[in-house]
Image 1 (cartoon, rainbow, N blue to C red):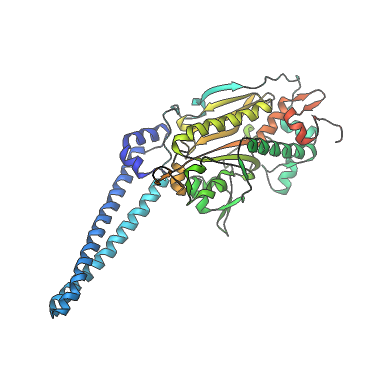
Image 2 (tube, helix red, strand yellow):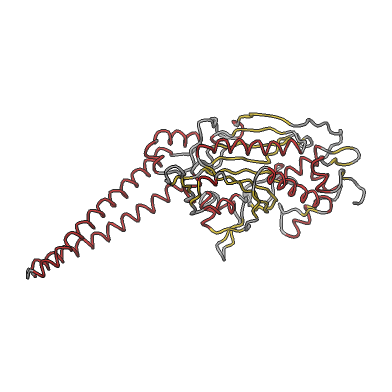
Length: 429
């Protein structure tokens, strides 16, 4: 969440930033925060004065009793009792203001960086780069859900039988391709200096709050009501929460973690052609990269993460583009975000496969994730960053569609050592 320092010292900048993010009632929300903080500070000041006066008067009672001034001592006792009662009321007022302040801050999104373009939705995102190999497909090219059926790679109907729509069953070479992609992505992350983590795939509410999924996205998360636990929408949640309530040493930054997990998203309201096949699932595999860094180095960290994801797409020989998201299309918590999309030649559309975001101090403030500066030993909020490297479903869809030939589906060279075959065809493996 935003810090009070940001809000009180850069009020106009914060309001303009929130308006860029299409946050309705930005000015009123910030004014309420400032007014609530003023109420809290005034109650704190009065409470401090009250306690100081109580302490001062209490010190006089013993001396008065010794001197035989019992009546005066009793009067002071009565005054101290009144002050203590008033202190309880002030403490309650201060606690209520503090709770209200936190609740208000939780409803306010992060402020986008100046580099973020103006805009309302996806149509306003800025394409900053295109790359990869162009593809020419046969005239009778098939979408991936037809290819999956033809070569018995994925059974969508069986997934519906076992669980429901959006839970596919991978089979044979389809399952091998999944495992190949997972291991390839993890190995590439390790070579780039990321430490692999194997976290839980269910988290408590505090973890969801720490990274900003709660209270913003609870409707998109699967909730285990009995235990009040949530299935993770991304490994970002458990991995970033490793550093909740932690003070790190500056010399240990940046911290670089990666993790493979299954991810679960309800995707409420999704329907139509955009959800065919692997385009939008409720359960899917993803490798996430997460960084914890100091503010002055986070821009470089972000660029290194973007370079890493781009390198993966180049090795997979897929046509791709990179977009800088506009204010209205960014997530609640991001300060700046770049999306990677791969082109599906068979579907004639771009498929998002990664979002790489810098959250500035927004998540760290919720997490209370700080680092201790080497120079003066003072603590400051860290910056947190994460990105998909990569999400598997649409990557697999693009590989199947863009590499289909009359003989079968060609496997990208980088994956052959991982899956053990260079062609998906009708021949038994």
